[in-house]
Length: 152
Image (cartoon, rainbow, N blue to C red):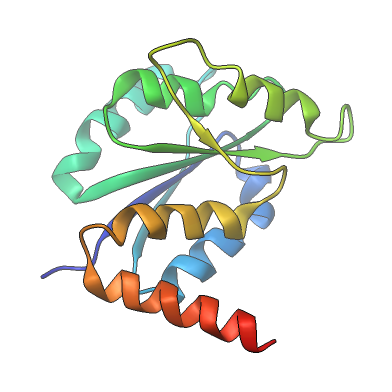
């Protein structure tokens, strides 16, 4: 069986430094990552193409990272029935609270699971929890990760 795939989207290339822990954590769990910078505001057509094409590339979960108005996760969720995890990115303006509130206040029918501001590792681990329902190797890796954490 091929490795599971997560699509990691960010609203801007400037978010890359804050989302790198997603790639690192997923890699440790044996999950493939497709990373792209696509703005919900500046590139809506490219974003739609990416989201609609994602299942053909094996994508099963999206992680969408964005700051400020942070519409990316909600827009992605409106285009797919796959799980979408929102990763609010901090900014100097409001410290990321604007992004967090934008993600957790989604309208009924368009859910976005949301982690803490700059919670990249937790976004990856939540994606792994979803994938672990189908992939035993991911479940085993996640269990080993938690056991290692418990040992300190």
